[in-house]
Image (cartoon, rainbow, N blue to C red; front, side, top):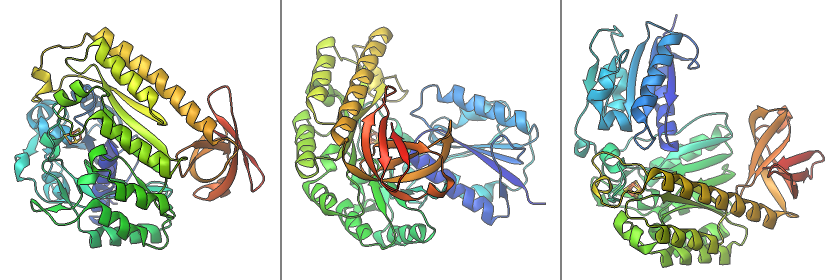
Length: 441
Ligand code: SF4
């Protein structure tokens, strides 16, 4: 009987795409993949360093795995494993820890599967991690996360990602186009381009060989992909040519997620971000001028060291003034080995959480206003396979979330709907042009 492997992924879309790729290596080596709560012979936990309490979460997942399968071999990989291999090796039940470069050779490292009292560590310094390993996720065939870039050469003072993932590096356009073509041939309708800093796409072996815009142009030519979504792009790298191209593309959807982090130039400087807020405003205005229906998501951090109440209100008012659609709010927390953690002016926890609450309310308001602006329009919805209380969900190209009564025939299908109204729960009711009724939320 084949050995069984199960996975647990913490963190971002990049981690999900890499877990999928590691999973395919196990399948090629003759393993069967089972659900985490099934009895597996091997558990692979892909960790994140950005998550709060990474250590606590990792311990919890290890404990959970051993509850299902007490003799299983437990391997921990990912950003946190690169940053804190020794600490992870101390967690009871962990058998092996693999660093950023080693995680893609996991099959070579896993051979004996014998548990011992001491965990084995395979780990090299991050500046030796130069290889780009292509990855993409496979889920329910609706949407695939395709990794096009890894690492980051920026030095934002709050961020541990460059320490955990190393320098910026990418695949070749030819390889990525081939992967996207294969993904499309497998019936997947939407590809989400992922990376750490995807606007910086094109660096190989330390030198620039391509640009993200050229990748966008090449991917747009691929027959068979219905939708391509750019997951997140730094404002200073979101050029006019990219915005103009997306505006006339049939495949790239009108949805941008652009990290702002702060609306105060003083704080942006302390964060060592590579733009001022005026540039951000210009980007939003350019997008909206060409694509008034475009969805724009914004990342923002509250409680960065030195952020006074006035600085926060600056951020709040700035975001409020922008025609954006939703926020992802992060409450700043000190990360070891970052410059920000040494800065003066730590913001008390209560203020951090008050500011977070204010921005969450602003996000709801912005989302509602965006949904309202879309009411009455017709939109294509790609329905997904999840079922919740008899409903299934889907997204329009511009990221309006729709729900409708579950119909298995709609899974992974694109249907045209009319967006009708927003329900009291913040959902928008829509009529499906094909006949049935749906809700958006
Ligand atoms: S751009 Fe800044 S925040 Fe984003 S990964 Fe790079 S260093 Fe971190």
